[in-house]
Structure formats: C-alpha cells, structure tokens
Length: 433
Image (cartoon, rainbow, N blue to C red; front, side, top):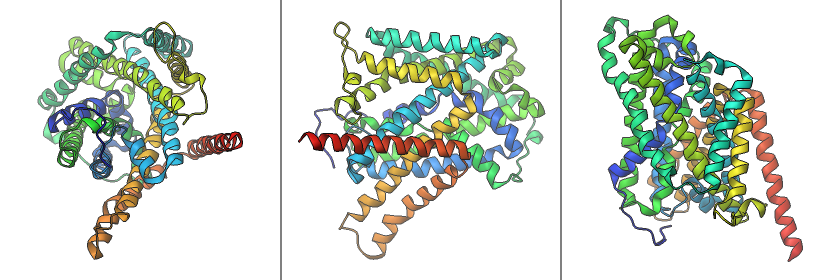
C-alpha cells in the first residue's frame, strides 16, 4: 500500500542510517556493559551477537513490509493493515504504555544512577523520587507551553553522546593487551536469553526511523539498505565498547554498575575522561527523555482523537498554548510513577518485552501480506512466505520466554485489560447507532 500523503520523499539511504543510529544509540549502552558482564562474564559478546542477529532479522521484516506499506506510521500501520483495527489498537497501547513509558522510566533511573557516580546522595530513594518529579514536571511544563527549541536537543544530544562512545571504542584499544581478551561460551541458554532480553533495550528504536516512510526516497531500495547498515554499525560499536570496558575493568566491573563507561574513561584519561563520559551520558539520557515527552504525548493525543483510546479529554488542546496538554500531563505522570517504583534493569526488561511483542506483530504481518500475494507460486511462495518471518518470530518468542513469570503475567493482564476496553467501547458505540 503506497499512498501520496502530500509529503516530500527526500530521505535517502544515509539519511535513514543517520536517523536510525541516532535513535538506537541511547541511554542503555552507558549502563548495560556491567550488567551483561556480571551475568555472562567473558561470554558477553555471545549475547551481543544474538541481539544483533535478532534485530537484523526483525529489521529485515520491517524492511520487507515497509516496501509494501509506505505510508507514515511505522509498526502501527503495518500491523493495522495486515490484521485490522483491533490489532492496531493493541499495538498503539502497548507501544505508548508499555514500550515508551517503561523506556522513559528506565532511562530516568539510568540518569540518576549515572549522577550518583559523583553524588552518592542520588542513591537514596527520596532524592531519586524528587529528581524524577523535577525532570518530568519540568519537561511537562515546557511542552505544555509549546517550547519551540525542543527539537534542537536532538542535534546537541547526538554529538554529546557519540563523542564519549567513540572515544572509548577507538582509543580504548591502546589501554589493554590482546592477551586479556578471552571469550568463552560456557553460559547456559537461560542466562544468555535473560540477558539478551535486557540487552535488547540498547538495540530497539531503529524501527522508529520508519515512521517517516512517507518521506523516504525509493523505499524499496532505501529501506532495506539503510536498516541493514544501521544495525551493523550499532552492533560493531556496541561489541567494541563491551570489549574495551570489560577488559580494562576486569573483575571489578561488577562494582561499577551505575557508570561502567565513566569508570573506564577514568582509567584511560583520569578525571577529564570521567567528566566527558558523564556529561555525554547525561545529555544522551536527558535528550532521550525529553524527546519522548515531546513526541509520545502526540501519539497519545492522536489515538484519543481518532477514538482508538476511549477518552475525549486526552484529545483536548490547550486554549492558549495550542498543545495537547492533557496527553502531555498524563504521559509525564506515568513516566514519573514508573520511574519512582522501578529500577533500570526491571524497567528495561519490561520495555524490551513490549517492543518484542510489537516486533512479533510485524513479523506476523509479513507472513499475512506475503500469503496474500498471489504473484508467488510453488516452492518460491513457501520459502518467501515463511523463512524470514518464521525464524524471526521463533527468535522473538524464545527471548520473550525468558521474561520472569511475574512480569509475563503483568503483560498478559495489561493486554487483557486493553482488549476488554476495546470491546466495551465497540459495544457502547453500536448501542448508540
């Protein structure tokens, strides 16, 4: 399905790559190396390879369906086109209330953990809650007032977060011996699966770049090429950083869960290195939160406006500032609440699980759309319909199977509640006809 939405198709391959890499590389990589190393030790790279391979398969599914459905909307448009409005409703709610809110809360905790490297006071619960209230309150206030300069954060954020990462990835090779690099594969499948679920938090986001599908030039060629290059760049960078951090810190890495990259930079360059990484991490994390608070309430507003979410008040526009103020306030309150009651590891896991559910829907969409393509015949039809999306779906289900039972039950209850809400709204609407 390709529609002319009145948008100019001006985004080429490298524009898509830049957009994707900027979205993928966020807060997770500043904290995750220590969590991964603590559980998997020198076998950490196995988890990176698994996550990289799975994300590549997922993005190939996005690329496949993205060349057929080139309207703006990304995963929502793909799933809604393939399976209808109910599936689109589930996708919207899981994305907003599961993936996005949980991700914001996780990043807020990561920011507090990073600041605690220099200010241990931020380890205290009441200080963290106050900190979260200030962050989300500040962002909600200025977004309600229609802050015009919010988009400039993206440019500053990109430079600020890439400088320390590239500094460690490139210069770190001069600070350890090759004999220190020992890669083992003695970890259990369960350990690798659980850590992969957490590690995926650092990989998700490339699909967001496809929300501008209606503005990508020659999408049938640009989307597959851009996505493959993006994932490859991120995997290489992440694995390099993990090698450097894990080798330089050695056995002490478990004691630096709050800011492993900052500790590595401190060994490499002293206090200056620590400051560069902490400032870069802070910019990256705050930029991530501010970007989500800027963009996601608009999705919440649009969902209410289009009656996907049964609440007219959420679709209200501020009479003076002309912003979706109710949606902004609700989203910010949810971010604050989950940040206050959760911690980075748990929230990152829940966010990753929510993203994976959406990814599974996209993989199944590929099967549905390919099956409906009558131009495919015989063996070619079977291979094209099933190989990529079925392998991808199996990988996603395997990673999701490592979600702890209480979190899995929570996801099931949440899906059940929004499903009941959907059918109740439908019944009410039909009774009014």
